[in-house]
Length: 47
Length: 223
Picture 1 (tube, chains in turn cyan, orange):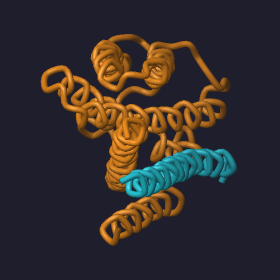
Picture 2: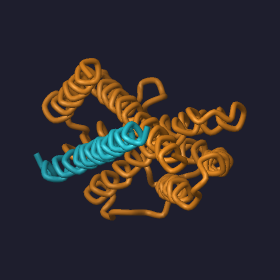
Picture 3: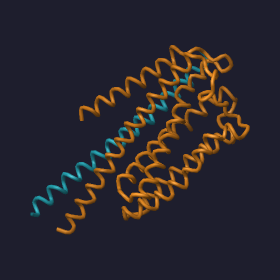
Picture 4: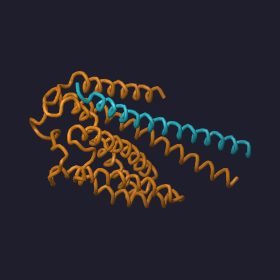
């Protein structure tokens, strides 16, 4: 079972990259949705 | 929302099953031993990255022919996802290379062309941040995207065309892999392809929301 650490590290890094990317896209989308809601409110108040 | 959650859960289950297979079911490779199991993550990630860049190429061509924003959104979504997969390839490769070759990195054709590919798609994304007008940005990046796609066949063919330190192809050749290894490899490939589709869809949605926000901001400015 030599190099178990290397295999574990590779999987941790790989999954870590995907998880962080997934979270980053979800966060950016959520921020934009907030902007959309705020803009819609501003436009409705302006009418 | 419910469909999205089911999709995400299916991807997590597939990824967990493929990791279980790689760690506990795959036989030990004779020369490299346990470390060869990185192959079940590294190689399918590479193939999935190339597939994502292919989708990006389709998006770029689609924009050049149709001039519709949705093609541009597909282009940027798949370029970013492809870059994430390519990053994993470039990070896991050296972890495998050190025990197998004795060095983390070798400037051979496959490794170098993959690094160039990563840099090219990074520059594609940086380029997009430098142009404010959405139509101009989409057009410039579509042209650039079609041009940089030329490196994709180069990466794929590098181990066939040149003598490299990188292992020779075993996936698209007959008899190159033990049947159990092949099953686990195919499961990994399937799970990473499903992840790629999920991520592209999520990133595409971000572009849709961004476009809506831009339209509303213009309306608010005009009002």
